[in-house]
Length: 356
Image (cartoon, rainbow, N blue to C red; front, side):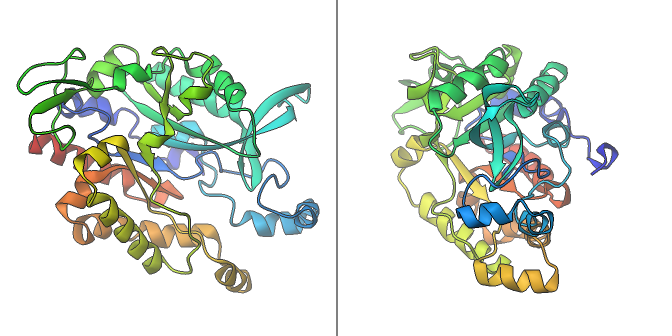
């Protein structure tokens, strides 16, 4: 994908200043990508395959064949995605014994069955973007694989991102009497808290104005900076849409998304407050039977992604009730370049501003 083909929504949060001054990170919708680093194959199979299949994946033709179901953001660098308006990044991380320069050193790689890149490159692209777009707030979710040392990879991430990362303590709401302002200064709406109290966390504008342009989602207990100074928001705050299921059709995935969101919407306010970031995964991974059929018809994961993307506007506007829409905080898609996810997120941001 040529850089010129990426739509330019690089400063859309800054352009929505009124909304960003009024809303917190728990009230907006972050447009996101699924397996964000998976733009091209850069190494052999890493997870999910038997040793025999791992060996077969070293054969170029077989590697390309399996790779059809690995690439989710074809040709799009992390910087491309951020310029295109994406504000939630989903990184799947494993460790490697050699760095990108071929030197023997513990390093970390991005994976989606195959190695799809070095974590270092992705982190540098995030810093490059934030340095030139100080009004934007980006969520970065890190999911470790192959039993890697969480403290080690989180420390590695902090080396690059801690300068811009928001301390998690700033995102912990301060409960106050109704009608008063808490210690973080920005009142919020929505269903968080109880009728007899108000909860306050900083607005997006307050965070970015203070140089806090990143929210890191991981495991605070493994952080190298324990306590109130940790920059990791607990993964328990993020709902990924329920158990993973391979499906054979877009319609099945829409039905599953709808049911999972309905289940979450039926939770009490207290239960919702415990998991404040509901992630709608508007993606589809074909089941084994469908993949065999796809191979025979030369269909790929991107074909499924584009079909799924085409349903997103109608799914959000027609199939979801206002309560369902109100609970969505993140929407992730494959091949975001063919999706309306950024435009939908911006519209939902404006709708939420009008509702408070």
